Amino acid sequence: MLFIEIVVPKGRFDMRRRQALAERLTGRRLLSAGGHDDIAAADPGVIDLLDSLTDVVVREEEVWVAGGRPAAGDARYVVNVIAGMWGKELSDHLVTRITAELTEAEQGPEPHVMVNVVTVPEGGYGLRGRVHRSPDLLRLIEQAKTGPREPAPEGTVVDPVCGATVPIGEAVMLERDGRTYGFCCPHCRGHFARSLQEAGTP
Image (cartoon, rainbow, N blue to C red):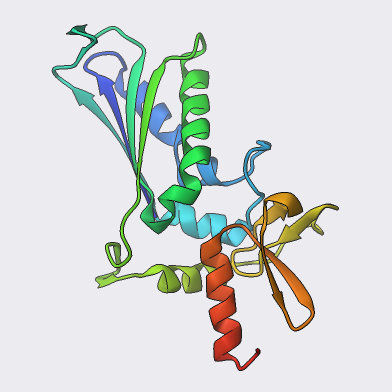
């Protein structure tokens, strides 16, 4: 789901620090609430799945010129994130979380962090030897759901597809047969609506 490439100037970090940087940007760390208020609390099983589909690499660049001068000693990062088909929905969150994680790693002033979130077009993601489109991934997510550990707090809804707990004001809503459902994104809403239609629910 996520391929994260952290690019750093050559010689700035030893192997231990590069490993620590990679561990800061795992899918579990970036996509679970983890005490951060800027993301909906996600289902633990879904987080396990997404973490298993996330790869993080740290690359050192031999030559790096920024602003017309060598960047060798600078606290500077470029992070390229290939975010599957949900790059647009995840973009704000990923930019904020990645910047916060790298700032914390520096233990000082906010470093220069440029985050590029790249969305893969529908049909452009392969897994286990075949193309996976958004309905395929949403089915994997539905199967991975374990259910919430606690009831949803007041003023929130639980997405019936991915299990995310979303504030009502931020949820994408759907009304069907006198019931109202809330979703974390249009993808989950569309998948749920299609499932109801296939099951013969109007």
